[in-house]
Length: 414
Figure (cartoon, one colour):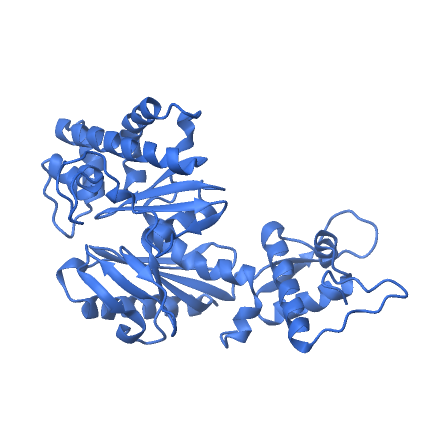
């Protein structure tokens, strides 16, 4: 059978293929069917055949395999009004495999579980002074939170088949061995952390990824980002991510998107990175709080306090947000000139503060971008806001299953 599921034409001899190539072909076709249903469910088997070009026989076999793996289910009979026997409606299984997203912030831990449809089924957050304690204590509490949310997932009929951890730091992929390694998370005080070795269990260690990258991917999958865009977010520092033609761009060593360290004022304020005049000392959350003369306890929502004061018209807070917005506009104008993105998306704390940041940012962008059209609505606030990183972490597993469903049972988790 050809790769598209069609039989060779009369008189043609099908090319001889080894077992490996036949397995690869079937794996590709499983992914094609899975993506087709994910993009437009509910669909009948006949609908899938029509959309993919595969024969109905091939689709039926592939669908049966996906149903057996718990990835698809068939629902009620269609009521389409067509003549003939109605088909069964195929949909993604919302009571089967699921992704777990975990997050370590400077002052909090987070976890969420999403099903194959991308719907958040459970979400937990916990205040935690992670910057003030050793990594092993934070990881122990995170593992406890992971076990708690997985138990709740089981009660809902879900089965977590992948874990991804969002961290505010740089990450590298080892040449050999499982997982990823955290190089530096300066706001946590973590350096050269071998997560697979440090994970206390139960269960295997999650894969680890930079929070800004995961926030950008969540934006691509469920937010307002599409095609080529820049995602910029604020937590303790400033995170950035570049998505080019729908793909995350990490650079040669994985450090692309360090927008917080773009120079906005040469010979300006010192930055934690050792340089001077970076964006972060002017527009990072800590800088805004300092300029606002606000002192917030570690167990208090600093962003919520800024929003409350800005809504009340606090002049120091409004002035600090104006200056931060101007600095952000300066840095992002340089990014627009270099990348030529379709949109700039504000995520994290910036999304919550967008009402006060956007006017100054738009003014600065309009003043500095003259070599290409730049409409005001190309700068947007994320609807995901501070949930982006943990949501992106959970969705990573789901997106991988959509792209390669056979990985579920070939990895032994199906």
